[in-house]
Length: 511
Ligand SMILES: Nc1ncnc2c1ncn2[C@@H]1O[C@H](COP(=O)(O)OP(=O)(O)OP(=O)(O)O)[C@@H](O)[C@H]1O
Ligand SMILES: [Zn+2]
Picture 1 (cartoon, helix red, strand yellow):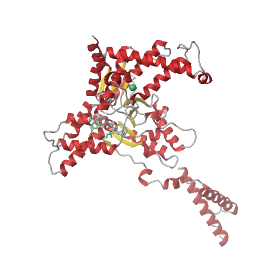
Picture 2: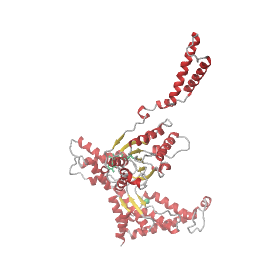
Picture 3: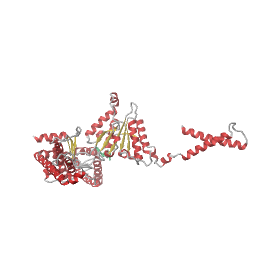
């Protein structure tokens, strides 16, 4: 509106000036009010407007280089045909997703009672584990529009373009409500904001935060934003706050049972020969993701065609596994059977000692490799504790050393797998000696200078405490060796173990 008024005045003034000059030149009166004064005013206005037009920062030029289809960021929304039955394994996650589906389908029910419908869910975990698949299954189950975007497509070298695209994305979503926006690789826009530089990243993230805070939805409108990332650790904490992505769901690599289920889903429409044993394929694909398994099945089918067979045989799968694993070269992607056995004992040791010394409730034990470790014990979050007795700390050290001790009890020798454990145990004991006055060196602290001055005594004390803890742990594990073996065997076969299953095994063997 303001723009058109600008041009009306501009052309009107040009017209009047031309008419004015013409009438002066020809000595005729075209318009009675068109005197020299008015001509001068019109020319001044034209001059000012032309000056403005030439000097104005031309934003449209900046956008001109942005590829045409991106300029409008035309996002297609679509109905997803994926259903939860297409997502194999991930039983607990599926349950959570079904609860969220109920929020979307029966919004009224929740709004009536004053319950807030979740705005954002963050799915995080290693690549290829089915995050995208889950989001589209949620859209499929609820029959809602599904808008897919990727964090990287909001990143442009032109400042402001990313923010504009985020705005357009949400406008589109409001039109399509009820709708699910899926933003893959959200870390591309959601990294921690920097003080200076990277203003494009900052602006785009700020826009996303504003949109999520502000989506002022009409009564019947429902928009759910699902973000996916492999790197939750680098996300800006502002994104994870309540009201934004406040629900975080971890999606890890599948265990053996889940891998077998994924194999079943992906071989459903493929002719398999009788010799194909999905369980044995599941065992051989330890540490691989759902995406890897899907490509193994596809590779096996290609091999069958190449060999002029109309059925997939076990050999096709074995060769496909080799090819996929060889092509991966990912650290920890798969471990040998022997390593898997050692890791089973190592993690069983941590879990058993943690339980026997009553340190913390255990939620889950896993020997599925991640990029950080070959296995892990996940503690159930208990209430925060700020004060520890000397005995608490010694027990903690024992549970940390229990991985290595279990290796020694089972195999008579230790591996390099306890590197991190040793460094954690050392840190705790150094704290006991130098910060908390909990050693035979007395009720005192040591500052850095003093540590250098008393290095020998501190080292001696450290060795004494850590050796004693290790001895105690070894003894405890020897006493409960049958139980240790039972846990390790269960882990070896099933790859994951819940706290409940662990308690059952311990109860069975400790009587
Ligand atoms: N649980 C599963 N059940 C069935 N198929 C799966 C499962 N997990 C992964 N897949 C297969 O792997 C493919 C890739 O999965 P998806 O794209 O959902 O992974 P992602 O976690 O989003 O990966 P990224 O983090 O790399 O984006 C899927 O299309 C599917 O074929
Ligand atoms: Zn360990």
